[in-house]
Amino acid sequence: MDKNKIIVFDTTLRDGEQSPGCSMNTEEKIKVALQLEKLGVDVIEAGFAAASPGDFDAVSRIAEQVKNSSICSLSRAVENDIKQSGLAVSKAPLHRIHTFIATSPIHMKYKLKMEPDEVIRRAIHAVQYAKTFVDDVEFSFEDAGRSEISFMKEMMDAVIDAGASTINLPDTVGYRLPHELGAMVRELTDYANDRAIISVHNHNDLGLATANTLAAVANGARQIEVTINGLGERAGNSALEEAVMAIKTRKDAFGELYTTINTPELYPTSRLVATITGVEPQQNKAIVGKNAFAHESGIHQDGVLKHQETYEIMRPEDVGVFKDSTLILGKHSGRAAFKDKIAHLGFDKVSDAELNSAFERFKILADKKKEITDDDVRMLITDEALNSGKTYELVGLQISDCSNGMPMAAVSIKKDNEVIQDAAIGDGTMDAIFKTIDRLTGISGELNDYKVISVTEGKDALAKVTTRVTFDENAPSFVGHGLSIDTMLATAKAYLGSVNSYLSQKERLSKKTEHQV
Ligand code: KIV
Ligand code: ZN
Image 1 (cartoon, rainbow, N blue to C red):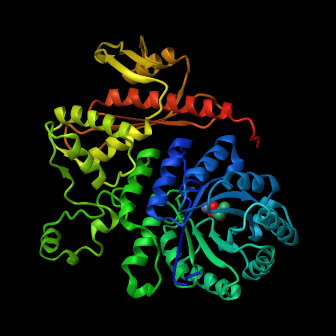
Image 2: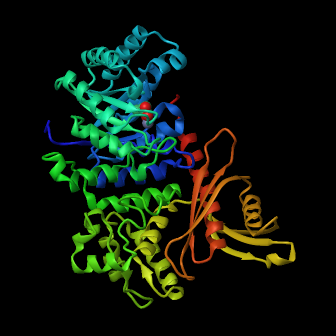
Image 3: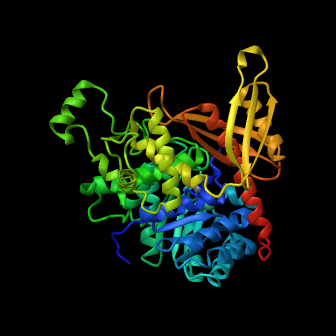
């Protein structure tokens, strides 16, 4: 093991997915996992396999497809969780089980209602049991940030002897200040004395997650648990892009330490996660926010033009942001130029069918929109990939004048080459669209969240709609995506996307017989 290498453990698909409104379906998780592999993440925490059959399915399908990153599943320190994790990750060439128990006095007393001795016994058993499935076992001391150092040393001896090779110290409630967390990591790294890799997992409740992660690295941590766009429980986790770029940019402070992240993939990964979850990073978000490299004031613009480093500490292209993002392609441009452009944007795994369909949509868009930017093309390709394999396809939408008090929508959709149509009146145009789709599909959905963003500026901008719909009160919500110059058309596509996603999940799970959680 190279002592200068910082292992990047991404938990976007587990802790990130726990953020309100960020749940993803299996197909979406697979897309994110494949992109994380391309980004060069060392370990992908693909989920919590025992949480539900859907989670198990997602982890095991990711394990089948990702080859170059280790696939990990989280488990409480209980046998069934560990077993489901072990089964779910088994097909991955590189795999790990991550198991945990709380170690802080407050968690042990009120949540676990266990004496410290019992916590140690459970931890030992969890690691030993996990070792019957995999070689690589990580153990987390939940709420390490508020745990006693002496108890963590005792726990460390116990779980290392049982076979854990990574000890993770989560600041679960985001309580620690950087100098305190740094001191804790230093003491425990010295104590571990190379018997295990020390890892950190910082929450952002006080806005200090990345600062804490970097303080930990400076004090001996060699694994960082992070998420794309800083997604995660409550205020989120330490953002992968921030920690990685800080280590890369401040070589003077971090010396020989390095990650093997392919940094030009940071921005495309951030866009994919934002598109799938419908949760956009704030505009001034470091590294990947819309304004991260935008210079508004004349003085700054002048400085950057004269010498880039006057106001830029990183080159935008090093994180995958290309300033000249206007595509000089129009309605007369050919397929080859389009293909060239998407390859340049990093979509090298697009199938011929996806390319053809995206090209057709590009031509339609080029007829209506003056300038097509990289973001438009990126959105076309991502949307194509997210909506492939659908049961229902939107064929037509007609909406009535909504000022006369009777908003009406007529919708036609296609299933297995058969076109069906219907119309309904609603409380508003969107309500009329949803009611009509419900009637046509025979499935009634409840809209939990609706978001619309404009992909670029201008009146002719593409509208990107994300819907989150539940079809059964005991099941999670299903995300749908719609892209169009017309917001209502994008809305209908997104809602139908949620229906499709629900149906495909239902079909896949009904075919699974061997796995029971
Ligand atoms: O925040 C936390 O403590 C966690 C652990 C389960 C690693 O997410
Ligand atoms: Zn966490």
